[in-house]
Length: 201
Image (cartoon, rainbow, N blue to C red; front, side, top):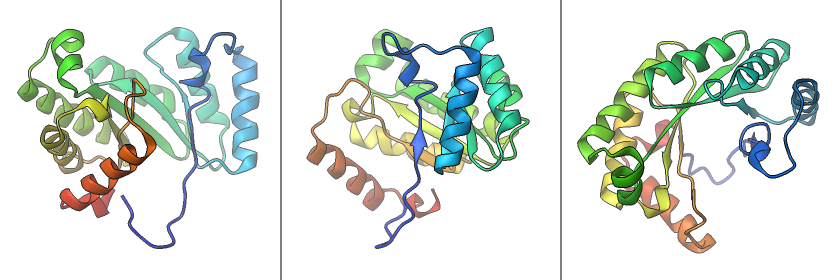
C-alpha cells in the first residue's frame, strides 16, 4: 500500500469478471479475447479475466486470455477453497505474468450467515488459501469481501495473516456499497497506518 507522494497508479480492470455480471453484459468467448487484447493495447496493468472455477466457459476464456497476453498481468478469481485455487492456477499458468486473486468474507453478517464460520476459521482460511496460491505464482492478491462492514481490528488481523502468508496485493472492497467515499478513503489510510507491513504490498 504505497504512500509515495508520486506513486504509479495501476489500472486493475475487472470488466471480464465482475462487469460481466451486469444484465446484458455477457460476452462470447471471442469477444472476451478481443476485449482483453484491447485492454492490453490501452496499457491496462492487471486484467481480471474471469472466475475459472465458476464454469467451463470461464475457465476456457481465462486460459485463452492468459496464453495470448503479452504484457499485462492476467488475474483469475478464486474463493478460499483448494479446488478453486487449483483451477485458477491451471487457467492462468500460461500467462507471462499470472496472478491468483483469492477472497473470503470477513464481515460479521457474512461470516455468520453466508460462510457459517467463526473468526478463527476465517483467519485460518486466509492463511491457507494465500499460501496455496503462492505455491503457483509469486503474484497473489487477497480480498476481504465486505471489508467496509468488517470489524476494524479483525480486518487488520486478516490482512496481517494474508501478508505473512505471501499476499502481494491487498484489496478492501465495498462489496454492498455501504461506505461513502470519504469513509472509504479513511479506511485505507487507517489500515496503512496500522498494518506494520503495509509497505510490502
